[in-house]
Image 1 (cartoon, rainbow, N blue to C red):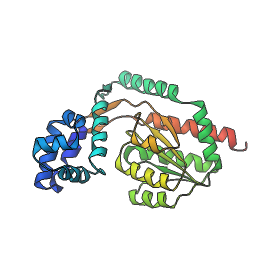
Image 2 (image 1 turned 135 degrees about the vertical axis):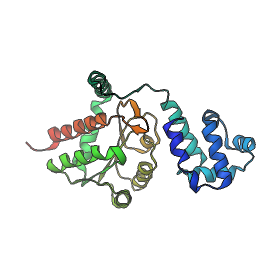
Image 3 (image 1 turned 90 degrees about the vertical axis):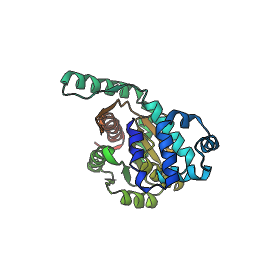
Image 4 (image 1 turned 90 degrees about the horizontal axis):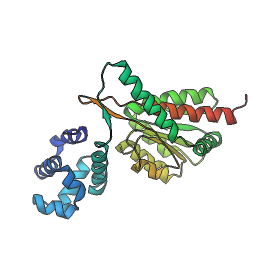
Length: 256
């Protein structure tokens, strides 16, 4: 069973009997769910479409369509190359080198110029990253602060939500997300989009919901890797792109 489906199972305790029935079918037939309409699924498991919608919401999604989109994405992710973490230095070094090399090929000079300009014209910069992505944000905010920008990276989820509601068009938000589909970053970016805040997104997956809402998107190459249930996927490519963006801003706009 995939990590994604295992995470869904953890929601069982808060589901009703019928919702548990829906979840059990999803876990047993994920590919079928990804290719079916909500009414088709309802007929197969003898529940209403409303029950399927409620189940999707109980699992943390706005509805069945968002859940289905996420499921499809995870099924596609499982087909991507993955590595098995080990203590072998050569294997680790080769993986990191490949990720860095492929990420550098994805970096667009025009986008670096646009990103540096957004930073230069901003009143303040707020970083949004949860879980493993937070460390990237913290380091980048620290460097921007020393470069003369008002920059913050906050770890508390509720605080991030409040900050998103108070940013304006004169600020810049930088969102870092491996999947580009985690619920909290998507919630923050929806708030930011509504308030017309310029958004720079750094994501490890193409065609994610996050990048559809961003002003500027940088893609990075991250190879999936799990040691048991522990996500060992690297965040080094995110650090790299943030470093390039900040260096380009400093070289272009900060007085020597």
